[in-house]
Image (tube, rainbow, N blue to C red; front, side, top):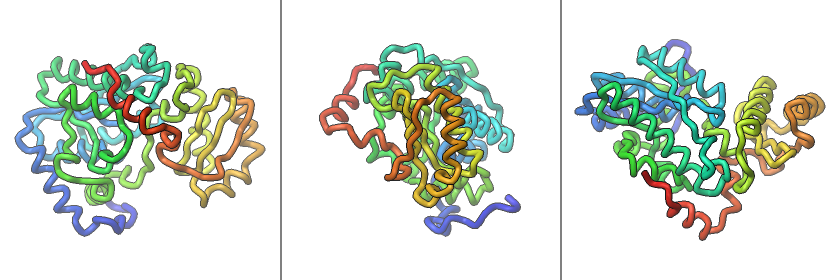
Length: 291
């Protein structure tokens, strides 16, 4: 795409080969629903599927657990690729197993999402459901992957042996505007395990993060600890956040937080998993909840 930023150095030279591998695993798929989140991983799966799968439908889960910005990004991407796009209402926030926010939370969330996507696939006569999981997810703590396995959701990036560097390189090669977009997991990931999740709390986090992005902060999280908002930003952006501290405090108090803090360790993806003990991880990965 004209005006695209320079390609990322990692795996840029092999982007064409990586795309070919991805298209190879997708060929032979007659039709598919692609779960599109607004991030780069699912964007690459959708773009590749649009090139080689005869019938493709993009679908995005819509509930309070998903940031409004991500929903817009997903719709914009589908429009760019000329792929039909639908929003699928999910009701994980009504599930007590999700709301209680145990370490197995993602299992129940993904079971709800993938179940709804298969309902959509059957209604439209489509033969597969695809997600954006890649090889880099294999070593992470992701109970939700059990739902994908149980519901036979395919992960073409993983099947092709592709990780995040290759994914970003393919996205850049194809001119996808999200090629360097920071990861943005669902809003429930901002809550410490055991903190009950409600629609109102999810809205607070979404509003707080949306406001912080207006300050030019790019990769961030607002971790919700009761009436305390703990802000994680990259080390290079800490001074920018501190310079805006009076306005940030005023805005987040208006949203509903009594206290506002900056995490001196900075941004870490999956920071709330740091406190999990091995036995808690094992229990979450073995928790009941398969369809």
